[in-house]
Amino acid sequence: MDVRKLRHLCEYAAFRSMACLLQILSVRQTARLAEIMGWLFVRVLPRKLSRYHVARENIEQSFPEYSPAEVDDLIRRMWVHLFRLLAETVQLPRKMTLANCREVITFRDRRKCVKAMCSGRPVLMLGGHFGNWEVSTATFGLFGFPMGIVGRELDNPYLHRWFYESRQQTGHKLYLKKGASDGMVQLLEAGGNLGVLCDQDAGRRGVFVDFFGRPASTFKSIALMALQYNAIIVVGYGIRTEDDFVNGRWSQFEIGCEEIIDPAEIEADDEIREITRRFTAALERAIRRAPEQYFWVHRRWKTDPVTRRKAKEKKHKPRVAPAA
Image 1 (cartoon, rainbow, N blue to C red):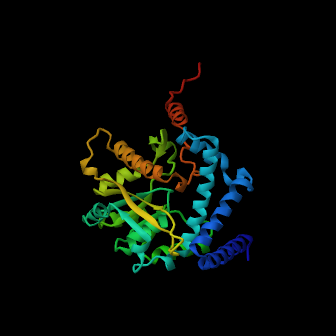
Image 2: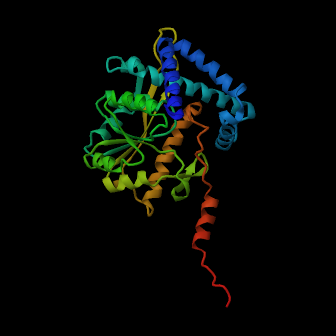
């Protein structure tokens, strides 16, 4: 057995052991454990490992009115949320079913969202590294709206298989970013639903739109797919709301539709930029409701528009022939 396979098996064994522990914990115990882990990540773990400086810079730029103490508190609450997210992902298949989902979730703008999903046209369901995206996608699957989910293959094949099978339980299908374009095209041509994260840095080839007051490189592919396949864009979210420890209920969530964008109604010279701007602004509005549930260690503003512009100028700069 090679070293890599052994490491993957050890990681998987550790994950399954932790999953067994999380399955037997109550909501109150899970929340308390998450509080402890959040404190450890902020106060004990070396800041380089926790990407503290990335999170701090992102929050300071996005919320300039926050004091240093408020920034640190938001980072702590972000880690608490992420540990609860992990626990909820493990508990999800047992804790949320079609029979009890109405006790777990509150669906905001349900009629508007269902109308879009029942239009007969393909739907691009957009979300971000925000809230509990696993609960969001599971909700639509339980309500009879399965979707293809675009994601990347995990480095550990055993963990990848576990998460893949977990998503399949609610009728979803996973499309890997590499090599799955044909399947996604067939899904959209058939009028299906495709779930995509829309807050990833697109590098130098992306289109820059404002996100929390700063230009962020965003993939053009979402707008291009919407225009090419006449797909409706639904910007959704799933945020954890107040816990009901008294009645021992599982985590409570608000599933919502922040905005619906119909590409046929876009009136702008640059349709791609306008569509991208609108869904990015909608995601920002949702995040502002619960900023502690956003993944602030995510390098969303990694690509600098000034650096991109200089690279393009250098690429197109005419070469001067050497003097004879």
